Length: 217
Image 1 (tube, rainbow, N blue to C red):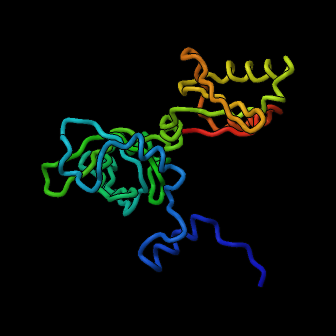
Image 2: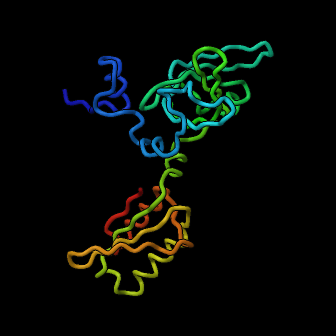
Image 3: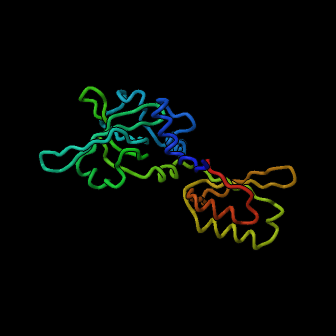
C-alpha cells in the first residue's frame, strides 16, 4: 500500500523503543548549537556543580509524574535527557502552574535552576522554563550574507538591503561576503550595526535579488 512516511518525531520514538537509542537523528538536532553554546551544566558530572549557582540546561522531558502537596497544590517530578546525560527534575507548584502548557513529557525545553546535591543523586530544581527556540536564537553570534557584487550596482538594490538591515537590527555581528568573479571578499559591518538572528529575517534577506545565501554561526 502507498502510505505516507511517519513524521520524523514518530520515527525517532520508534527507533528508541526498538533499538534503545536514536539512529537516524536526535529530537534535539535542531537545538544542538544552542545546547553547545548556552548550556552550562555538564550532565555527565552534575555532582561537580555548585548548589548556589543557577544553571541553564536544554533537553527532552521524560518520566513525568505529578503529586499533590499538603497545601493542595500540584508539583511534578521528571527527568531531562540531553546529548550527553540525564538528570532528575523537581518542579515546584508555582513553576508548574506558570508553565504548565509547556511542561509535559516529550517536550524539548530550556530550563533554568539550581542543582540539589543534598539528597544523594543530584536533582535539578527548576526555577524558569523557556522555549528552546529563544535559546537557539540567543546562541547565534554572527549572521553572514553572501552577495552577488554584479547585482549591487544599482542604488535600489543597495537601499533595499540597507533598509532591511536597519529594520531588523539585533545583537549579532553582521558579515557581508562579496562574490566578484572567482574571488570572495569578506567585510564586517560596523560594530554599531547588528542584525537579528530570527529565521524570518533570513527568509526576507534571501528574497532580495542581490543576496545569494544567508547563514548563521
